[in-house]
Image (cartoon, rainbow, N blue to C red; front, side, top):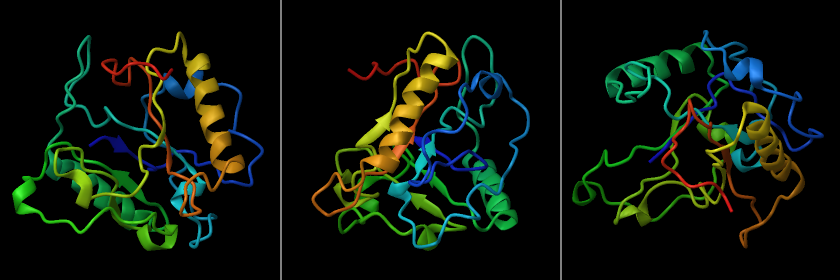
Length: 202
């Protein structure tokens, strides 16, 4: 499972004309503390998370950086930071996936959940997916069906173009699935902050 966080990150509502800003170069190179942790307070609680673009934050909370980044932070520390963030910002939500964390035989699922309303997940962790052979019973339907995962963009400005296109789809192409709900749209970062082991989107 992959990490996608809405912690203090910009979310695009369906009513927006497009992704905010024209470049993310300054933010891309800023490793400082997160700012504006109250991005979701004005989003209605009956909003579907699939109607907003969820910026990706995988490879965060790294143990150390350098040419190779060790991204195996202690889960207890991650949960503590997440819990403290949600206590201080109860209107926010945090979407997270965990690869290989559960032993399939020890956790029985009844099928993937439908996309919840934002009010159902405010102040909570939402298990977005569980990627293993027994994954069918866990996570949220269509969670990764619309991920912007172009990992090899030439520059942050090129990646930003991909991000804006995916964000615009969240607002202008709803109801792409038979259940009448649009898929959750996620955006993942590109190197040096992203996963360079994944192929680019076609």
